[in-house]
Length: 488
Image (cartoon, rainbow, N blue to C red):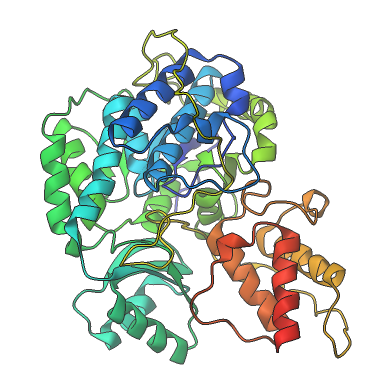
């Protein structure tokens, strides 16, 4: 392969999907009175209220409460969308140059809005209708399972099951593929994978996204999009679901329906962009979901920059953007960005964001009511993450007595597991650190770390009825392990 020269290096801005918002994380941006953020949140709130979901903006711009509030699951769709566009506006304002916009699954709507193909309000409306179209489809019990194996092996496992509903939904990287289908078929797939020594994890997802089973929902969404105005985008957008650049308004309309039924080819997209010269991958979203995938799935010479890996990182956003800007345009050929053009949806609207009396305060988690199809429904492709399998081996468990380990010993084990599996700096991990909000640990990565700890302690992996999201801190996880030891 031809060596890529420094002047040819490209920057990719990535937009994650529904799992990627952290309550209260936009508060520093909102305090600045940014005109775009103000206008954006007004539009998102208007869509959410029209759906009967209530305001979204308190989730993002008000201090997060310690007790979880009962928010509507639709807030997850609009919350991640608003977070991504607000961060992208800050990136644009800072003068950082970029070459390609890339969305993962539902994040494709964020990329289209950032590039100017869709108005922010229209994109938010389409996201809400996407959620509603899936609900109206009334599929039998279905969902998605993450399989820790490369694509070819997962395809072979699906072939062994030989169930017509199974489909490759997301190819995230060399060690994670997501399969969607009816629940009985997924259960059979998990049994076959277990027999083959392959780890799996059922995602808390209400339906079989990225599967032809949702063809009816895709048609409904396409019909809704017929009246949406599509403008000419001002930046390059590459779609992992279409497998090509978005070049025309027809491409946009095709992608809108495809977001429910076509697979997300994220691994091959990253490799294709790398071969073009992409070396800097910036994640415009909360947590560090896509940057973890990029680190695991591309060559070691790439730089991955999550703009908001945790709530604690919000105050350092300006410094991160300054570092990106400092190494930016001089390293690439001119014309690689749209920093002179406002993001779509940034209306000249200086009116304050409206609040309804008695609006709820943001919560650290957005619990989702039980549905017939899922005992723990959260969002769509909730946490696409890279497998920590390449991390150094975890240290042996500290010696304990017959009564098991002390809580402090278990807290230290959790801390070391997080450091080794996710490359987190140990000094930021306190016993009361919140895994998602403070450390940016995705729910899948939390589960993978938990399974590793079970192996260290010789404990049995619990089967069903287990909600990892309820264990929000290092101490919570240590307490759970201690309880399991005592009950063994």
